[in-house]
Image (cartoon, rainbow, N blue to C red):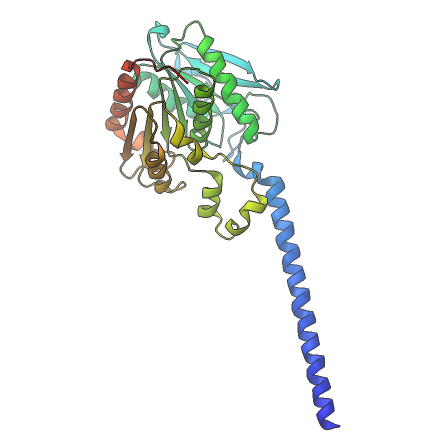
Length: 320
């Protein structure tokens, strides 16, 4: 009897333990499923930040000096551009005198804040590079239409901006360069591929501190989520898959101390860009993610100037 009792107690204990572990596993699985569902549903809001750090959405509400090019007494135009899906995006075209004689940079900003926050950078470009600067504001940002930004929408924004600028009477369509920083680099990659497929000439593309893909950034920023990314990740921005096929001249500007995107991303993009008819890279020693353009000094601007001059002098290549 004693032996039977001990066996019964052992069986009872094992059953209780299995039941407890099963319940814990069910709870954990449920939590993982809930978190995965939230990440799947809310991931756009984790990437796109029209407002940040107490700065309101609209440029007109920015601190003084960041509200409009008008504050800086430079010639400019404001345009609302209608995209293929009917959404309107806001833009500023900052012009030099005799603008049609100068190259034009189409500026795609990062994932946070409005184009007013990029005014100091754009004005430096105008001054040091002797160019027109076309600042594009994504949907849901700044004074663009109030729709939820997403990858498909931002691609339409970029395409509409390019179609607009190549037809502008004050712009030389043979001297258009794309510039993209961070998320803007992914937008520029997409637009460069779009331009080549649609036989729209681009003089060159300048990419600063951008990433291989959102999946690669998840590996870096959210390693515990990375094993499940194939199940929950909807956002692509797969620049790594575009880089090997672009024929357009490319300049990579990489901060060696980028504190957000691993420096290796830029090095790998450069390595993959085997089809570009003119490929260059400039590393900003100790350059950080958002400040490389300041930290790079005169050497930074000289590198972009020489790239623009060299790319502009290339004969226009017939696009297949």
